[in-house]
Image 1 (cartoon, rainbow, N blue to C red):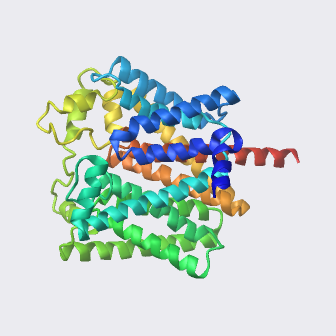
Image 2 (cartoon, rainbow, N blue to C red):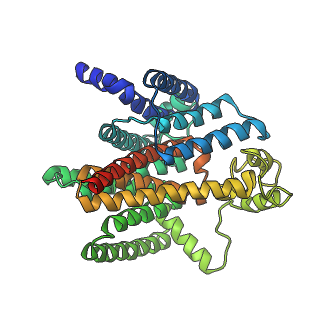
Image 3 (cartoon, rainbow, N blue to C red):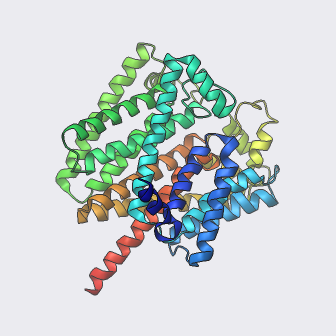
Length: 427
């Protein structure tokens, strides 16, 4: 065990150590008091790696995302941001920026470690939710030592229910994709993973977060449609399966609503009924109006400055309720104007389209391991992209750390795909 750990850490110029540290950064993002230390350590190791190897990525996708981070969350926050650029925020963004600039990640090993971490971290949140419901005293004592506070809601071991829901959401997707792709899962392993996927999905629903439920289902559908796109028979089966899932989900949603269940199904049912009755179901998204008010004050082209909106929103009637606007696209429009929003949307579309092309390619080549990695990368990217409409994805390290891990996965899969295509053209 000791020799194996040493091999993992030292293999190929500390690349495995970088991946492990990046996972620790995701972990620490839920416990803010440790984030600076974890990010600083990861950044130091990555800088040492760059100095030793003198190698960086050649991926256009990674370079463009790194440039976006350098221009907006870092430079623009420092120059125009009304609250400036704190060390805490700087470290949070420098970590993924350097991570995706690394060009020689051990791809299969990195994906394996990331999937394992994603699952274990989700089960850690499930444990927290279970303790909250069953052994409140034990949960309180653990949460108090981790965070310095505790919650009476279904937050697991995360700052709030939203983070817990999405940590579980990422792992749920990994389990369901593995069930569909990995052919070696038979007997007890198959049933074990199926039960794990169902339990995690159920715990995600238990958090009461409607957006995670909707996004999880949509992201899985996008992933499986991409996989089936080249085969008419598989595509028909996927369409039938998705329609069946949607029908069952709608039935469960309405049963949950009318039974008074306080979970994501029940709350989504209330949303549907509210929309049908013409009610306002935005759930404190009234801040969206404030975006437009700020944006129209002569800031249409370049905006008011990164993170400046969260400073101004505290001066409105909604002050103290929402630190960010729960819609990344509108917030970037307000803070960075047309230019920033167009750049961000282009990058998101480029990332998702690249991920789809990866899935289609590796599905056609019937490469199980690469297909699994490509599908998980697409799943995380779609979850992130849609969540940007509901929440603060690019402003919350817990979420964007997962996303930039997926960007690294997607870009490497793209480069390997292009190398294969180039060899085929030559040969």
